[in-house]
Length: 337
Image (tube, rainbow, N blue to C red; front, side):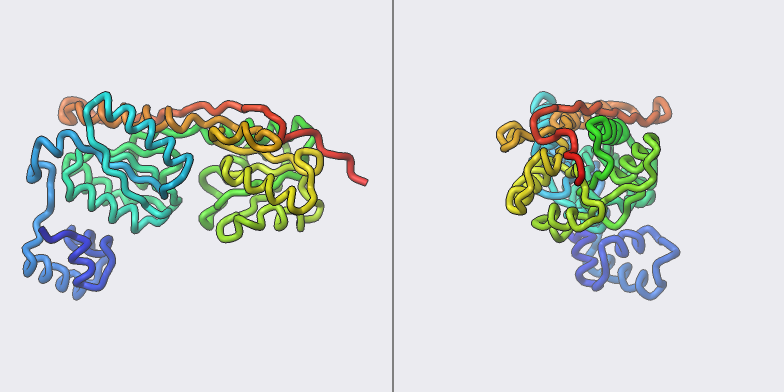
């Protein structure tokens, strides 16, 4: 069977361009559209719908998109999904997005071609999934539920960590200890106005602080603390994107001769199992990723069982409330000389 991806390779264009051309998107160049349509006809492309695949397989299979594996957080999300899928006797096909919109769209096409009944999406990128793409999935009978910070240019069900509460917990805790020079170490994906960076900035403003030190860690994960300490004045506390980054920062601080928490407090996120065994044991924010995965899967299965024709869809947002887990990696800042 010829797929959209194969047509894209033959035409020398992206899968998104093929998808749009096949759906008469006026923004696609006329010659390009004609070339794609000719290839589609030549290779006998036929759109795959749920009705054209094995009904038994289609009815018991869902897809899941994650930024990458292995990853403690994504693995925990998957664990929750698999627990719920086992209870409902569903199979789960997992594909990676690599934090790239095109990979997300291609993966969704692949899952549609497999005839899945629904897709759980944790995209890992801030670029929005186009509304037209969402509507195409819906037209094929595929239900969609997003997880965590997944940007979609159309209303959809979502299950995520309450990012506003997480940011408030982090900022309130560190300010309460007396810290004022705080660096936030996380990948920004080129945009600090969405997702966790934006939530942190809003939390700081609520406490009367206008400037957020957001350090984009992408590409220099092994130099986070060294880069942070080059700032003036130097930070006394660091919030890491997750516990893996926090663990790396503890090691980097030790290598630089900095004591944690006396010279630099380090706060993590997610409460991975290893956090309690670090030295010092990591203070972190529990995000309950297994519960996020479990509730997202449960919501998806409920949507699959609903009749869309009976009542208008009222989309839901399920927020999982994070909780501070206090250990030994944070303390009051040392008085400056």
